[in-house]
Amino acid sequence: MMLIVKVQIGETGPVVTLRGRDAWALLELKAANDNGCTPIDHPGPRWSGYVHKLRKAGIIVETIRERHGGPFAGQHARYILRSLIIILETKGDKS
Image 1 (cartoon, rainbow, N blue to C red):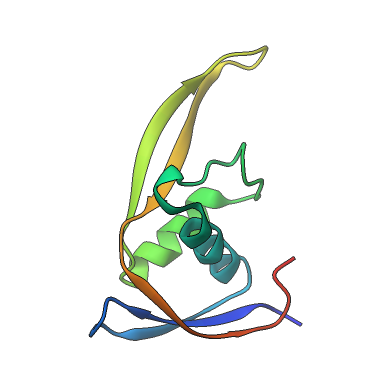
Image 2 (tube, helix red, strand yellow):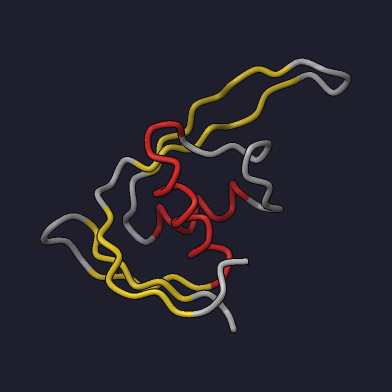
């Protein structure tokens, strides 16, 4: 069963329903607190796409660019949830 999460943005903000990987990404961001999530720490095929959809829903997510070394050195994004999110309902499997 697809993951479905209903949340309220802020204490008096709108209620939105997220599905699938967008819901998964929001739960990962909430669990990570101020540490945030990177595609390296929390593998997901389209983090930038999930964050884009969360922002379109009115959720504030900060993006911090970080450098990384190794054989494929470059940059990656760290996403940090900045909106207060109240989880009202969760259905389905998080995996």
